[in-house]
Length: 578
Image (tube, rainbow, N blue to C red; front, side, top):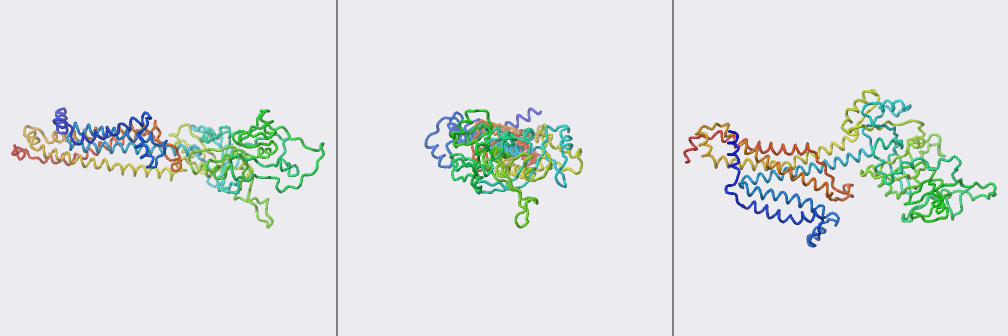
């Protein structure tokens, strides 16, 4: 009986005879029109000059054209090809809701996947600079924290932990000052806790956070030992960095006193490597000799004596945006100022002077998140403690979990283990407002684009209503020969099921294929607006299944009214029409 009901349902939906109707012709023409763009985009062929000119006039850069053409043309080609097939195999009233359901399902899969891609990209950028879990005290900073860290490390599921210290402050260079957040970290552990090491432009920058010169025999140049103007103690800048005023630490010094040859201090050997505006200690004698002779290596003239003071300063990691704003480069000296005051260092009126200290730029990182790249500055934990005169005090711990999905469970376990005096927050809680906004936006987009599928549902209602009206005599005849209302209802429910399976299934398939194109071709977007170079896409198969189920439910719900009409059909009244 079920096979007979399916046969009747197909019979009501299929066109008989099959022919190229208006909808089939329109879909086929549009599909063939998009085919050259598909071939050009997928295989990187040259586009006709007229088409290319129009795309450029629309604001697309040349490097943006082919990937976008490939993605949009492929999606359009597949959709119009499906419309042509619907128009050929099914009746017009069936092909229209099928096309609408296909379009809605395809759009939802694409939009959800792209939004999941943005969310995944944002999550990776957040986790690149913060750990999975952050642990702090409710009532202030931590002291004697080594035992607490040992207990954290022994907790099952914890991969690594790191003590940290944070404070707000100001970084100044080239007569500009910007408010930043100083974060003191442990360089040897930071790579195990977050991904800041991966975002460094130079992987060796972490090693330069400590002073480059640790030899106790090396003494910084005193003002009385300042060289002549020809070899002034100035931190050199790259030659291509314009309008930079060097920082001269001998400007207020007294004239150099005459020193006997026996009293003159011989500068200790200092191996230098100057390349791409960076320097580091090295055992290369040729580089040392070239630098001492004033050779131009990497764009500026390096003098060993003039770099000695910078080498002894603690290193600082700055973001790319901050480096651009302050015109910083590796090796540049910067001034750090904290709003906290130093009671032991009052001014002339007796007011405490804020803490200030010079640092050296050890490297530049690019997290891909503008707020981090502009406002976050990394220094070693010991350097920040010394800068703020805080002894061995820290703000808390950053913890990395072995598996990302276990973060809530491990956070709950740590909270129970450490007690009520500690605040244990996962990265979702720390960035709750950000991820909540993304979730609300995703739900809103699902509902808005889902209206396309809802409109297709109304078209299904109209289609099945017309079937009930047109097939009233056949329905009456079936009832007259013994068919029950239940069997007739199953026929129309089967029709709704067929429309839902075919429309939503084809739409999901086209959407997944287009997502695959986006992942492979990586169409570029404006990095100035989105802070990324290409459109991210992440297919969440749970969301795809939700789209498919939604399309199926809408098509099934659209059959309820026509099904109710079939139960009201009187066989005697219907047979009078024969």
